[in-house]
Length: 400
Image (cartoon, one colour):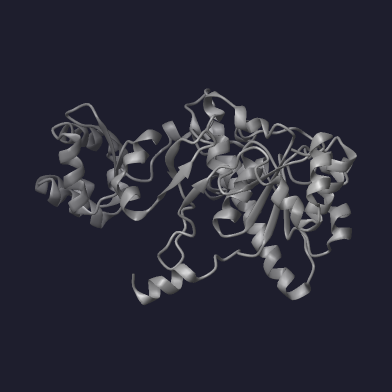
């Protein structure tokens, strides 16, 4: 290991020393903590007795807990018990950052809202992840799918008349990212003012921000954007093509210089010299005649042969992958994009790390998922709870 690499390895993580306490479930709230913990913060997940119900989800929700809760500390408190609730208040007041994503008003009723905790700790940064920001909808219940349907993303994703949610929890995760942006801004401000802030991000407004490019398109052109499956592409060759072995590859030719490279690479001198295809605008207008020729051309290659040829040309391309293919992706394996993770049942796997490099290194290398209440004693001890008191609280089911 080089001297510089050794120094980098010894360097504290960017958020080392910060305590985050989260009262979260499902995806959006946990995503905030998942990012902060990978950047070095201590993240304490407050769970009910028996653990967060997200742990037990099946089907498409089976991966939620494993993806967004590794390296956190699990503390189980009974918020319906006055003793458990008081400990929750003490724990929250000890934090630099509190994160919550429960229904509007829930935390206030428990005495765990921003106003109550800010009195105990004026430096506290309080992050609320909600369905809607302040306004007429703020008391509605929302989910990722609700926001996608309401905010125009489902309309843009599916074919006309068939709104379709995106193939992952894109709004939950992006909303969590916006929450982190707000938290980091509030942290920087706290360096100057000594005071915390309340930060909020939401599913609906996140969705609207993402479809903002289509709103801008309408404002610029006067024409409403069509759903992506039937959109008018900005480029003539920008599509998924079948190969000789029945596989699929996406290819994009997005500039005049790439058109020249494409024609040269595939020995299409006649096509490249045709004045009807000289500019991108001309090629878009001729798309109906140009695309069938390209489809026929690519159909003559196997997936491996086409990918190898495209790799040499510098053209944008992508073999169509499935999530499970990413476990064996050579780029991710070589670059450290996947970290070793121990699941709650002891199974060893690899999952994506935070897609950020700091001086060429990922902030973390993997980790494990906490067992239910695995850190309750450790964390409560930091609040001054002695072992005898701990045992009494556990016997009374105020903690686990």
